[in-house]
Image (cartoon, rainbow, N blue to C red; front, side, top):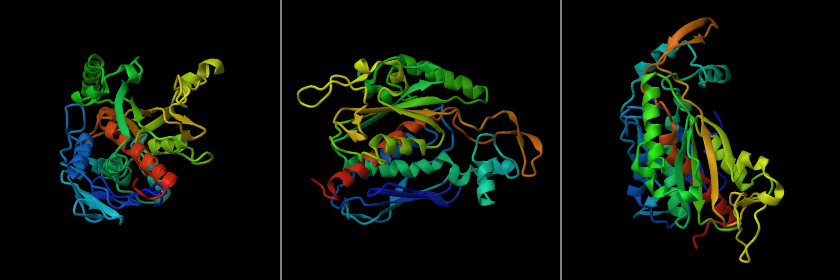
Length: 355
């Protein structure tokens, strides 16, 4: 299986399965001499871990990360940083019913067709549990990029969405509720709705918005490696993601160019920021902001029609512990992937030196 590595200079390779002994990663290209706050890294994992509230999967995993290499006396050595997160609460029997059948909208069928064999326990390598390793690497990247600020938040669940610009929100409220929405009134509505969906044995999708502040001018390569293109790749590589837009996004098509153009101030900043902090594929120093759309989780705790390995139509029913809505736990994943992109482009812009 190819495609387990992300990045050019600041690289992450992940390994492991949802119901294997554990999962982890190797970070290659992190410069030497960076003091890492291991507690802060664990705190990022705790934001993603299952079982943290009544509206997420109740799988109980401590998600404790252990580092094996690349650190000495609390600092990075410049060598590959290896880490692992041990699985402790697998219930593989919950998936025995899909050993011979395929869950609709999951990777089950295409894995079997592509590889001729699959790990049906929780989806194996296709499970969103793989993203735990991304959060660890993203937390390391954040500390390398100590000047930049990454803030993601839930801006929509189903049809319940925020109608405010991020600049009109108190993003400091994001972590004060289970949904991770900075509008507390809307967060309460979203939480109630997710609980209702869960009782129905159904699922719902949503949107995670993200803002990156204090970005220097000049990150990104202007042709195939445009900054927004790689950010899009990073976000679309996250499980359940169906869409990515940055800056004015799809709403920009309804605007005239005379309105949409970001006019300059004398210092090179812009009066408006419909460009989303990126022009010509290169960061312009303004805030980078984007949205990531997540589909409803494919596993339903209700009966559904599918096919078995012989192509016969069968009736199946989801079992096990699943998120009725992924977006609350996706917030730190979106931040992590954004940090990996920015760390990589930072190294590409100035070489592997700390300044």
